[in-house]
Amino acid sequence: MKTNILKKYSLLLCTGMLMISGCTKDFEDINTNPSAYGAATFDPNFTLTTAQLTYTGSIDFAYDTWRGNLIYSSTMMQGLSTVVSYWAGDKYLLNEGYTAAYWGSTTVGAYVEQVKPIVDIVEFTKGVPKYNNVRQVARLWKALIFERITDLYGDAPYSEAGQGYYTGNLAPKYDKQQAIYTDLLKEVEEATNLLDVNGDKVTGDAIYKGDINKWKRFGNTLLLRIAMRLTKVDENTAKTYAQKVIGKTMTNNDDNAFIKHDVSGARVTQNRNSQVLAGDGGQENYYVKWSQTFINKLKTANDPRLGKVAVTGLFLDENTKTQNPNYSADPLVQKGMPNGKDLSGIAGRDVRQDASYTTFPAYSSPNPAMIKKDGVSFILTYTESELLLAEAAQRWAIGGSAAAHYASGLSAGITFLSQYDAGLAISSTIADAYAAAHPYVAVNGLEMINTQYWLHTCTMLDFYETWSNWRRSGFPVLTPVVYPGNATNGTIPRRFPYPVEEAAKNGVNYKAASAAVPGGDNLAGRVWWDKQ
Image 1: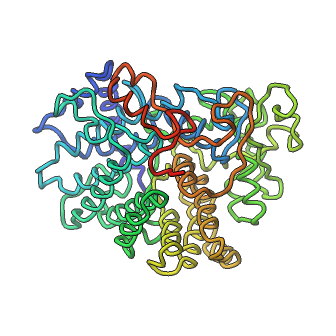
Image 2: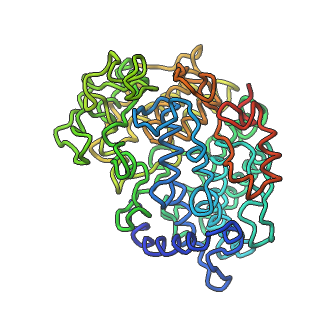
Image 3: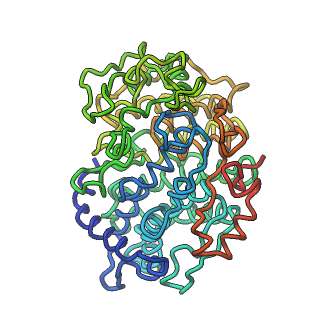
């Protein structure tokens, strides 16, 4: 459905991103040269496609996805597990370069590859009516980008970020996370309301191909997610904004926001998770598996997703990238790898001495249909929306029945797998029957809702969101790994530390923000909304 957009823009994307990376040899260039755009020549649609694509990961060999989404988030959340030595996440070891990867440097990462192009669109379309819809979509995308940045790090450059060309300020302040969230709510609400179904066509849209009604539902769903992030720290604001979007959010899986990748642009347009999990840069294809926690959750519940998302015997040899066509998707043989293990030869740590071990191919891998080079990256989904609405109904008795929203979210979280590949399809009849056989129980409501959110975001392979919602909700209850030399005293990490190179680039603002982190600027510190 979305392939044609990336094919159309793949050459422009390659050229544009090369221009960006070529202009970012130092901090000043990042903040002062908006890819040589001019008011007369700038078409925001081209840049929108770039910003949408780079949100799924860096063009530089999935730099941030590899480190932030997979090495850390996926294993800390016990979605994936591995014994690859540099995968530090589920050992709670600090690799400062890896935790800094999402924030980025002068050439890769969110600030240069995502923030810079989206700020350019917002600035250049200001006061230009012919680009109203492009501008509002860009405002929504900007909010999406900054939601993730601040969720990972806490206080961060926001109001002055990417503004160097326009203001001359090369040392942006770190806005307080509370202020960022306040502005995100305002921006998303305003932008959603200003979208005009009779207005300009958004021709560079790789998500919905310019469907403004879908963007409206996306905006309201994003507003709901941002609002619900505040349940621990500002419940009144969370409730107020949740009420505003009742009846306006995504209506089914057809509203799911995802990018269908394309192989024509090589690493620029290929699926980011695929580049890593297929073993393009190492032996992840052989040694990265679904975790024991994840597989056991599906097995215990007799969940129909188990026979679709997991396979054994996918790679039979650590020295080959060739997939075994006779892999098994039989739910009965699926087995997750325990987290926090290695190949050290030390009893209690080496996975080969674990009771679960037989061979590495006998542990479950993600189904290859989920990690195709031209596969999809999910951004925001109907299941997330319905589960958050279920929580709002449970907490505040608003927006209808918690049980009904829960059932809809659970069923859609099963059937959405067909958007990866037709071979992963599960019929709505099976999904609805499963939801009916596993009904909502109010006394355990928050745990049920957020456990399903965890399962769903793991199957989306959006482990950033898995981690954020787990920190907010506390569910599912995960047993921490005990690994020697860990950096958190044996607790699951709560945030990424700021990049140490910020001390040299933006020293005064960095030092103030670092000193203000509750619990310290480390893996155990907390962001503002993660109130203890």
